[in-house]
Image 1 (cartoon, rainbow, N blue to C red):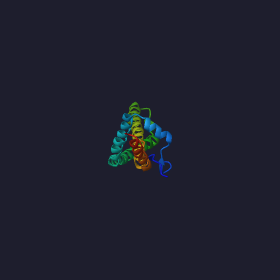
Image 2: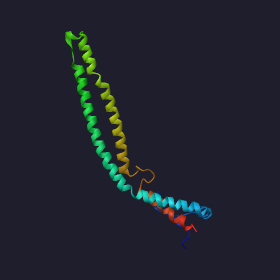
Image 3: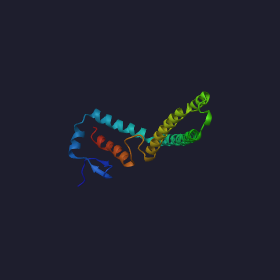
Length: 167
């Protein structure tokens, strides 16, 4: 004999599961205003979540483009840092090492180096963030909560159980 209790989709079991007698009692005793609020929240969240693929596509395009530009900037910074480091390692002022202006010139040449290192570190940090966002979008978990179609299906299926006892 088929039960009259509603069911919901259990994402972990990947099947419809009948609500328990305790859940049935909970839903029966829950004030109608709370059930209405729950149902409305599910509807609104589902509508918002429905636009997700368009948002994800746009964000993914932006993040991928941004990541590409950041990678280029990091490579340029690394090249500049490598060149300057090689220059310093190979520089020998010879007998002019005691000349005050040579020392001043070398100090001045090095002024931009710490800023270049700091800039590269900041850009690397932003690239790491962009990479994380990109990965989460590709896995479908960027917006949180619904990390799979089964989770979305489970979320939506609660509407049936709630509305079965709405009256």
